[in-house]
Amino acid sequence: MAVQVLIVDDQEPFRVAARLVVEATDGFEVAAEVETGEASIDAARELSPDLVLMDVNLPGISGLEATQRILEEARAKRPVVVLVLSTYEAAEYAPQAAEAGAASFIPKSEFTPDRLEEAWAAAAR
Ligand SMILES: [Mg+2]
Image (cartoon, rainbow, N blue to C red; front, side, top):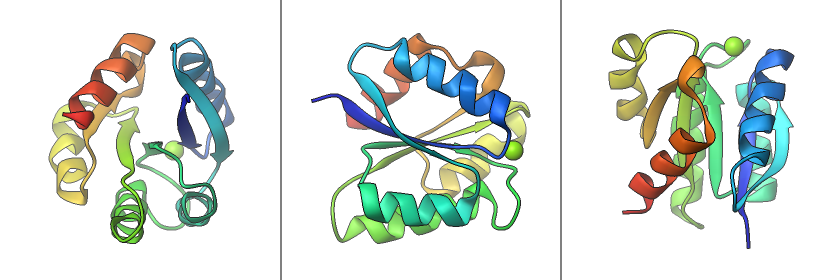
């Protein structure tokens, strides 16, 4: 079964771009797209995705806080991998993403099927 992916981004062009990357990657499928951190927590609870692509800058709670809460809730149920994506450079957010429990930080400009597969494989190890 394909890896089920939840896309979280407040900007439609980025959701479209993320969906294209997921659809272009063998073995990955978009489960849902949401626009806020709050909605991502609900969607993760309802859909139990395998992987969450999480934007950092969101209206309401940040993607980093949403990451922590999704991972906390999932701990008792089934594992979920969160990849944090941002338009900002890795140096700025990578440490915070790691602290929030994210498996990787990927700048949006570098998000490709290869990076997606690589990050998923690294998280599975
Ligand atoms: Mg954003």
